[in-house]
Amino acid sequence: MIKSYFQRFFIKKQGLNKRKFILLNEAPFQLEEAYKALRTNLQFVCADKNIKKILITSSAPGEGKSTITINLAIALAQVGHKVIIVDADMRKPKIHNYLKIQNFPGLTNVIAKTNTLEESIQYVTELGISAITCGPVPPNPAELIETKAMENILKELSEKYDFILIDSPPASFITDASVLSKHADGVLMVFLHGSITFEIAELTIKNLKSAGANILGGILNNVDTEKTGRYNYYRNYNYYRYYAAYYESEEPNNVGRKKR
Ligand SMILES: Nc1ncnc2c1ncn2[C@@H]1O[C@H](COP(=O)(O)OP(=O)(O)OP(=O)(O)O)[C@@H](O)[C@H]1O
Ligand SMILES: [Mg+2]
Image 1 (cartoon, rainbow, N blue to C red):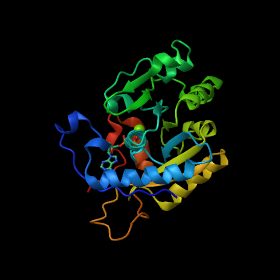
Image 2: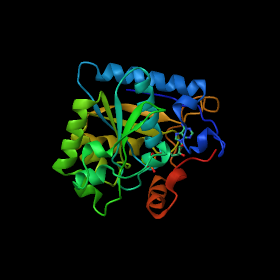
Image 3: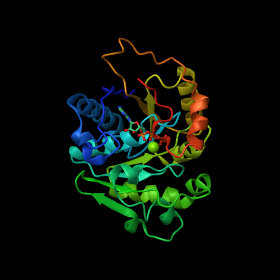
Image 4: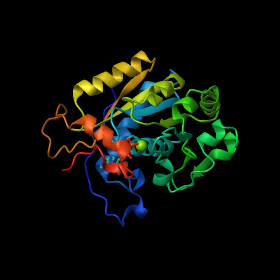
C-alpha cells in the first residue's frame, strides 16, 4: 500500500504563477516530503518488476488525480527518471491547463493518425517532464481508449521512458479507466480524504481488479493531520450526487471536494 498524507494549504489565485493546482517545486515542506515518500514507495514497488506504465485513477471526480499525476512526475524526474504524462482523460482533460501547455496535437490526434507520436510530445523544461495532452475531446472516448493504436502508443513510450503516468477519468460508472488498466502495468488509486465511503472505494478496486488491473496501492489525498486525529474516511458525502454534478458542470474542479 502506498500512502501519502497531504497537508491542506491555500493557494492565492494570483500566486503560484497563476496555476490552479499545487505545483510540487513551489510547495511547502510537508507536501514535498509526502511526494518523496510516495516516490520512494513507488520505486520499491516498481523495482525489478519492470512496472513503467502507471494509471492514476479514483472512484469519484475531483479527488486529485491530475494534480497527483503531475506532482508525482516531477518528483520522479527530480531523481533522474525520464518521465512522461499521458492525459487519457478524454472526458474532462486538464493536464494542458495545469501545465500551461497547448492541447494540440494530443493523444486523440495520434490515435486518429492525423499526427505522429513524436509531434504530440511536449517537453516542459522548467519541470523536467514530458507530456502528451489529450488533444481534441472525442465523441467516443471509450472506443478510442480500446483501440490497438492506444495500446501501441503506450508500448512505444515504455521503450523510451522510465515512467509513463496515465491520467484518467474517475473509474466508477465510466469504463475508460478499467480499459486503460489493461494497457497499464499498474494502477495507483487516489482517495480524497473524507470524500467517499470505504464501500465505494472497495467496489471501485474490485471492479478494476476484475478488469485485470494490477493495483499498486492507494494515495490518501488532502488529509489535514492537524484537524484529523484519526481518519474519518468512512463518512458519506453523497457520492452519487457529486458524480452526477460532475458531468453537468462546466467547471468541475471543485465538484466532489469537501468544503472545510
Ligand atoms: N492535497 C490537496 N490540497 C489542496 N488542494 C488540492 C489537493 N489535491 C488536489 N487539490 C485541488 O483539487 C482540485 C481538483 O484536483 P484535480 O483536478 O487534480 O482532481 P481530479 O481527480 O483530476 O479531477 P477530475 O476527476 O475532474 O479529473 C484542483 O483545484 C487541485 O488543485
Ligand atoms: Mg483530472
